[in-house]
Length: 213
Image 1 (cartoon, rainbow, N blue to C red):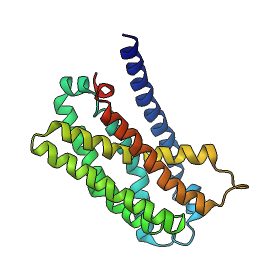
Image 2 (cartoon, rainbow, N blue to C red; image 1 turned 135 degrees about the vertical axis):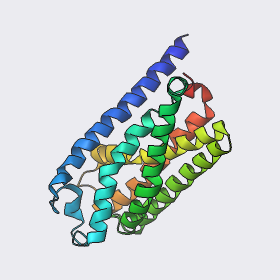
Image 3 (cartoon, rainbow, N blue to C red; image 1 turned 120 degrees about the vertical axis):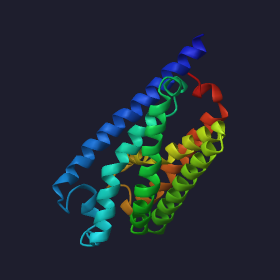
């Protein structure tokens, strides 16, 4: 009884945390609505801000990623699935199309010009490949009626989606411009965020009780 209550509380905290960080990301992203090429992250990308293709992919990515984060939140509750099967499918399609048709292509281009040198570039490109692979396998699995495999790979897909949050948490907590080389820290952070999220996802997959209502 106590263990079950603890699991429920942990799940609520996890969902609430992702929701809050998604909203905070939305607030951060709002600064780019001015189209000012010197604000936020763009201040570090002055070598490419005059490239219209890079800028287009950048805006496509930042203005659509929050939708991925919020859409994924509803997809892992068995209770929500039972009570809202049609809505689950609609949100799932939005999530999949957003990733495969918008963000994977955009992030591939952005990854080629990533901060962090070759460490950052390879980290982002591998992250992008895994994002596409996990999502495609999840879609193919549900088309074949394999619900468990579909659920498992959607969890892995969402783990990659939320690296955007983990990356920013690590940066805000540990980066100190007086102590760290920005490029090296950035590149290592790309890998660290991915490893942490995949580790958590695999842990959940090995503990099915955590995924039950």
